[in-house]
Length: 232
Ligand SMILES: Nc1ccn([C@@H]2O[C@H](COP(=O)(O)OP(=O)(O)OP(=O)(O)O)[C@@H](O)[C@H]2O)c(=O)n1
Ligand SMILES: C[C@](O)(CO)[C@H](O)COP(=O)(O)O
Image 1 (cartoon, rainbow, N blue to C red):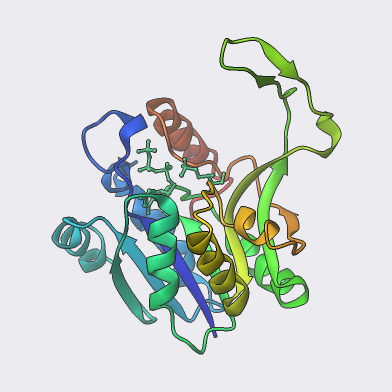
Image 2: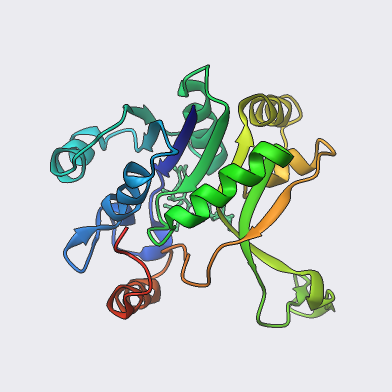
C-alpha cells in the first residue's frame, strides 16, 4: 500500500494574508481541497495522512473534509514548527505496512495523477524519487553583501517540486538520522541524499507551482482557466 503525506501545517507568512494560505479559495474552491482531490482520485494511493496546523482541526473539518467525498482512509495529524517536523509527524502516523510514502506540499494543487503514478513506478525501482523541472533562468549564488559568488552550470540544475516519494524505511531512516545530527533541510530528498543514497529526479510540470506569494494566486487562476490542469 502507498501512503500520501500531505503538508498543510504552515503559516502562509509569505502570502501575507494573516491566515494559512491553504484555506484560501482559488476560483471558489480551497487550495487544500484542490490538492486533496488529486490524491483521493488516484487509485494507487491507499491512505492519506493530512498534516494540519495545531489550531486548525475544526477549520479543516468544516472547510475541507466535510465537503469532500473521501473514498480512502484519511488521518489528521498535527504538524510541527518547521516543514521537516510536520513531515516527520506525518511519516510516524503512516500505516506501518506502507510500501511507499509520497510527501507532497498541500500548497501545490496542480500535481497530477500522472506525476503520482510515475513517482510510484520510479520509487519501486530506485527507493527515492523527486519531481522537478529543469531551471529556465541562469542561477546565481550571491554572498551576504549582495555580490555574486558563482554561477552554477545551468545544464544540470533543476527546481525541486513535490511529491517526493520514498520507501518507508528509507525516509524513516533519513528523518531519524536528521534529528540525531540536527540536520536542517528544505526538502525531503536532501535528507536521503545526505545518507549517500541516489535520488531519482523525474519531470513534473512548470504548472506544478507552490502557491507561496500573492502573485501565485493570480497565476493559479490562470493555470485553472487554461484547462491544462486542475480538473483532477
Ligand atoms: N511547519 C510547516 C511548514 C510548512 N508546511 C507545509 O509545507 C508546504 C510548503 O511550505 P511553504 O510553502 O513554505 O508554506 P508556509 O510555511 O505556510 O509558507 P511561509 O514560509 O510563507 O510561512 C506547505 O503546504 C505548508 O503548509 C507544514 O506542513 N508545516
Ligand atoms: C519542498 C519544496 O516544495 C521543494 O521545492 C520546497 O523546498 C518547500 O520550501 P518551503 O519554504 O517549505 O515552501
